[in-house]
Every structure is written in C-alpha cells, then in structure tokens.
Length: 272
Image (cartoon, rainbow, N blue to C red; front, side, top):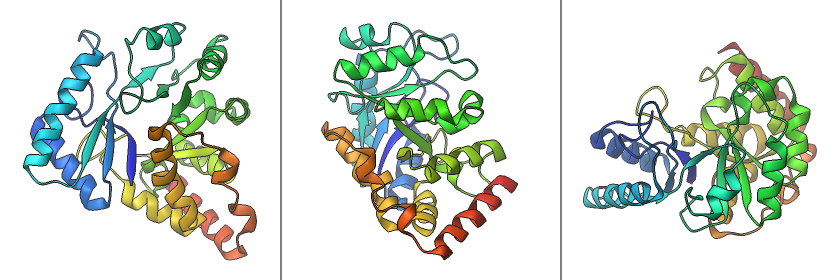
C-alpha cells in the first residue's frame, strides 16, 4: 500500500516529535503492508517559522537513511499538507510549497475547518486549470462538509480528488459525524484515496491495514486496492485519475449481503 498523507517527519509539526518514534511509525506501517509513505507536514505550526521545501527534503533524506539502516522495507517521499489560501497557486509556481513526492503536479490541500470562503472553489479551479492535480485532505472530518455534501459533489465534478482518512472508516476510531460522512462519501462513490494521516504511534497511528480490510469487506477487494494502492501510485506518477474508472464496478454491482454489511459497519462506526 501507499500512504499519501502522513506526519512521519519528526519535530516539525504536531506529528511525531522524536526520531525514535518516526522509526517506530515506519516499522509499524511496513508491518501493515505499506511500502511507500509521503511525509506531508503542516507548513505552519504554532510559534515555529514556516517550514521550507529545503527543510522537508533534508529531513526526509535523513529519515530514509535511518530507515534503510534499520532494514525497514519502507521508503518515504517528501511532500507537505498545503493550507487552502488565496495565493496557493502563486506559491506553488514559485516553488515555495511542495507537491506530493516532491516532483509531481499533485498537491495535498487542507481545507479550512470552520468556513468555506467565497474564493475557495475558485482557487482549486485555478490549480486544476493550470495543470495541477488536487487531493483534498480528510473532508469527512470538517463540519462545513458534513453539513453540505453537495459542496463536495461540486468539487469532485470539478476534478478535485477526495482523500478519506483510514481511521474514519474503522468502527470506534472517529466521531459519529465523521464516520457517517466518510461512509456517505464512499456510498456516493466520491472518494479517490484513503490515507492514514498518522501523527503518532498510539492514538493517531497508521491504520492502513485495518482500513484496507474494512474496505475489502464492505466494497470488495478491487475498491480496497484502488483506494490504497493503485490511485496513490498513479497520482505520484503524474497519471490522470478518472473517478468513474475507480468505481466502475462499485456498489451498484454488488450483492444484497454486501450492502447489508456496509450498513452494519456504518452503525458500528457511528456508535463509536
């Protein structure tokens, strides 16, 4: 599997703080079947100076050397979680902010938590028109989207890709509103990628294996592999990803018992 959204780079944001914990996170992810992670730290955090592209590249290079030295079968690529701002495109074009993998045209964009600005959709549209591929981070966790799925449908129609968080799909790992929104997005076939957004080795750990198993039970092996391996790989290669192709054999073709299983999973998760 490929995990496109992680906070494995130590000591730069609210993710892991110690190198030792970053190595534990890498080891845990590898044991789950993850072979590639993208380090996507927040560019701005607390009182710290803004994180630079050079700092991210250097930190990832040092971390990969330690991972290799320990014999962990995992590679980390550079990236960042970019805040949705009015000058996002300009900063990308100047090389101030980094795409996923460091050299692609795919960006992981974090939406605002409380207010969807009038210019937000236009910024995303301008990115796409300029040849960038946009992955919107964890929309199921945002109240502005939980209350308005139609807004996400509009963004997907504009070719924005939605990244759901692994823990949002696992019973008992997220709030009822978050879980309900995640499953609604899956049912509507709007999700392109599932990633862990792991921050530590305990509470917000890498849950990719369990998320894969949950997707496999509820939507079948093809969808599980698509969302955790095939699509992330394509995005890192700069390939065009068609949402209709991802879900072409999705829920509409499934048997009654799988639809029932999804309802059970949704109820268990909501009760968490």
